Length: 102
Length: 171
Image 1 (spheres, rainbow over the protein chains, first blue to last red):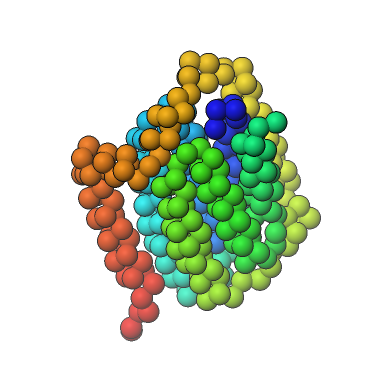
Image 2 (cartoon, rainbow over the protein chains, first blue to last red):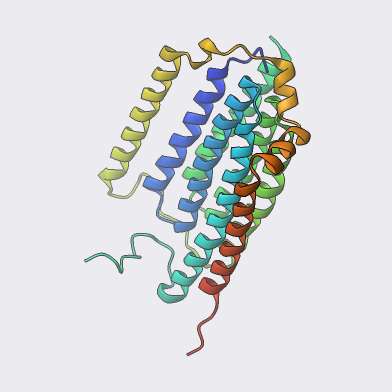
């Protein structure tokens, strides 16, 4: 650990976050958009674990634990919403799901 | 070159390549499989950072539970392949990529110019002790007991919410 500079991990975390943001912006499949959100949550976890490890303090890792809990809850409810939408509209393309637009 | 530097570059390379493949593959199932690979690379990086407990939880919860949920939903829903990412007539997509690259350059510049590690002296022993299940369990069940209970309640609420949302309506 000590021979890898901390900035390397933070750059990797920033890169994964940006890839996730780009995916949310350019993909049209709602499930892939959800996967990109998971990618962003994971990149935030990576920087939390990095700081926790370099500071020698376990509290950052406890925060990661809670982020994982929220990610699991979000995935369950979000996928249920996608299934409910698919049942009504027969599509998960977010360009065609526009009932709230006018 | 130290072994941990080599391992870092190997795992970081896997993480970077798989995360790009997740957003560029047209088939959603292939995206999901590359996301699993990305989670495994991250679990390796957590091990490199002495965070053993988080590394194991990453594999069990993310690569195990959450991705199985995603793959189940992908199998239930009939989804067509998307058109190739950059071939359709959407100039806004190029704009989105441009903004992303710009924000990444900004963050990278801040990290290299600001050097957040400047004031941190890594303590290998403290780092190893902080990642064990004993240290995390002790904090979780003493100082963080109320957030822990709330997290359990959140999972219960999410389970009930998912059931209600996905239930077939009888009319």
